[in-house]
Image 1 (cartoon, rainbow, N blue to C red):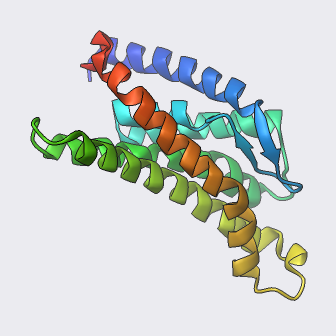
Image 2: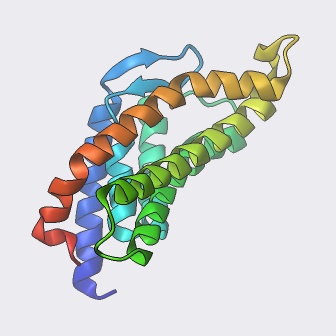
Length: 188
């Protein structure tokens, strides 16, 4: 990448991280021990991943996670902090896998196939975040599980807010995809 590409990446990431932060404050539902359903707050980070690739998407997501830890913290241990913030939000960069698969299919492919690959990228991203939160829950919040299996408890707890986020994110990414592709800056 040349110097201008790096500058564009930094500027776009800064704008998208700021947008994601603002969207995260529009909460539809807030879980009692952290996590919430928002107005598509993960979408800007996934757009960075779709535009710039998995690695740079992970970096932007990790920065966003650190900002989230400052704005809406629920931290009980340093390892839990890493799992629930920079790692969980960094894994949103996995959305870039959808773009990698799209680049391998022919230009004449159907919109349905394109949307399916975008959706797959979103599923990878949110599943990555889900897995990180579940692991943190199993290790650091097992006392809340009571008599339940701690893995099931953590998966259900995190699934209650990440499942709606998945649906919202897929819908918003698909709705925005064609306008994003038409922008001249898309082709770097």
